[in-house]
Image 1 (cartoon, helix red, strand yellow):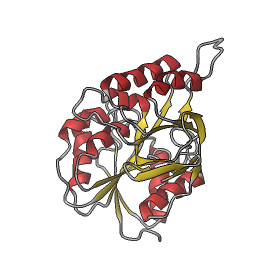
Image 2: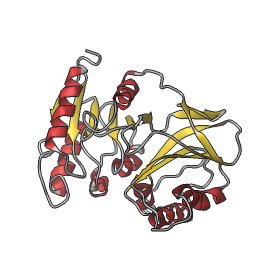
Image 3: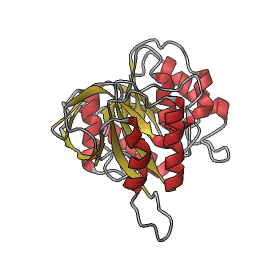
Image 4: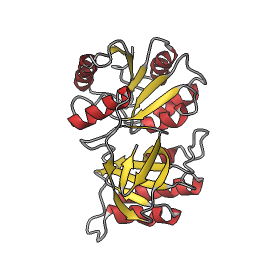
Length: 287
C-alpha cells in the first residue's frame, strides 16, 4: 500500500477511453493504495469525444475543485481538451497533481498558469495497465512518490555537447503548435523542450514546428529533446529520415538537439514533471 489514503479522480476531457483498459488501470491504482473515483461522464459518448462539452468540463471542474482530491488522472488523449480550456478555474482549493500526455498537452499549457497545480507528463489510464511497460508504470509511481528518476542517456543530434540546464517543458508537438496565437500559448525561453508525436506525416510535423517558430514559442530554448515519433511515415521512396526533416526545421533555432528520450506513444513512456529543473550533462538527462 504505497499511497494509502491519497484520492485519484479519473476524468475524460478528450477522447473516448476503452472501458476494459480503464477498469484494469483503476484496479492497478487501487493495488498501489490509491482511493479512486471515476467521473460521472467518463463512459459517455458524443461523436469522437467522451461526452458532451459541458459534461466533460463538469467532470474536470468537479475534480479540480474538490478539496478531497489529490490527483486528477486523465483517462485518454485523442482530442477534446481544447474545448475545456476557457472553463478552467483560476484557483484550486489545495495543491493537486494532474497526470496525462498527448492531447492533455493543451490542458497542461493552461493548468500551469494556475497556482498549486503540479503537472506530470505520463501515461493516461487508457494505457497504464495495458499498453505501457512495467518501467513506465514504476516511473509514474515514482514521480508521484518522490523517487529520484533514473538518469537517461540521450543521443546528441546537433549542436554543442556542453552541459545545459533549465526547466523541462513541452509535450505533444502537434498540440503545442495548436496553442499558437491563443491565450494559452506557451513560451519556452531558457527551457529544455521535449517534443513527441504520433500518426503525423513528416510534412505536418514540419508545419507544426514552423508554426511554433513563427509564434516565438521556441525562441530562446536551451535545448530540444526528441521523444518518440510513432507511426509518422515518410513519403514512398524517400531518401531521407524523419530525423533529417526535424533537424532541418529545428537546427536554425541554434539550440542543441538530442534524441532517444523514451517518452510518447510507444510502449515505454517514462514520466517527467513539467517545469521541474533538469540538466543535460555529458549526454545524460538528469530530471
